[in-house]
Length: 274
Image (tube, rainbow, N blue to C red; front, side):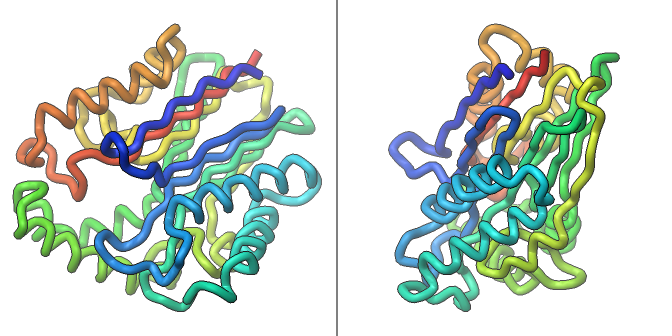
């Protein structure tokens, strides 16, 4: 397997809350989240949560090939909970959470799991691209974010509206009619999107946080086929993230592309298959 990986925090010097890693025949990507500006109830923080969960999940899916990805995720969430439930308030409304993508090759198939708004790109050998994204957070967000999108990104008014929006989202987290994401409760894994694809049909598998998919799903500057052309080039994920940063810099106030964050952590793991 040939893996290329790039990841940048939203701002230089800031902690990156994304996490991605691979092992032979397996890969994971997580995009950690809290409630911006709020206490999390966790002394470790969002980046610790996403990286710890990601590391445990990668281990689980590789050493337990017969166990489903959803069960591996549930086990890993339980292990992370056990690591800090005695020192942290995991009932707190803003406790750390994370999106999750996991992919594992075996038995002639690629298994995948997607939970939260990160994206999995499955490129087949005919040139078409299947994109697996959990849209439940987006669907909820569209109902709530009107006041946020009407204000310049980074302004005091935008920050206040964004705090209200995130607070409202937290109330819909891991609930029917809301959205599902990895947090303190292993049962969230039951709501992940899962599937299997014949391995021989695939040219590549790409795991992307929503900070890296902005050129397509937020800015509309590229399509998925163009994205894969960049990822398959010699500059690969680094070049894709550079283009995201260039677009963000051209619209720092969110006038052209309303968004919660002017810049976001961006991570791409591109897995080219032989």
